[in-house]
Length: 80
Image 1 (cartoon, rainbow, N blue to C red):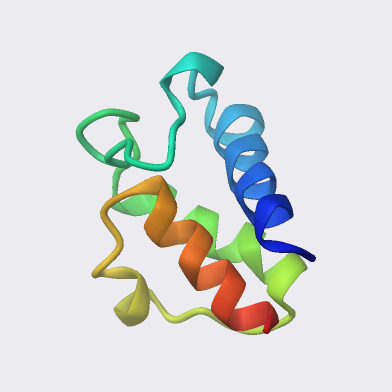
Image 2: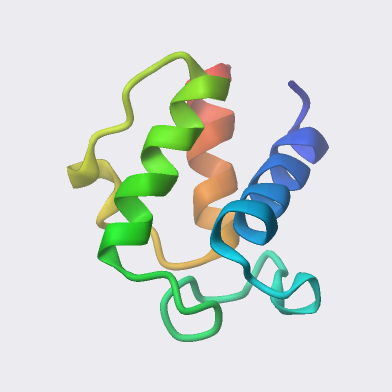
């Protein structure tokens, strides 16, 4: 998966699984404040991301995630 594909994957995940409006998703969008993603959603997101990364992303690592780009960066690191 290429970097641009990682962003598209995260974007699609937010729109399809968490019903975030497409126009709200941007790299700098804050997960909690702008998109309404709470801690339970974050755990669900980690589970979905496992499909792509093949790795387990721990909730502890996800605690520093604030923006959509932060999520993309984690996906990129895991698939690299």
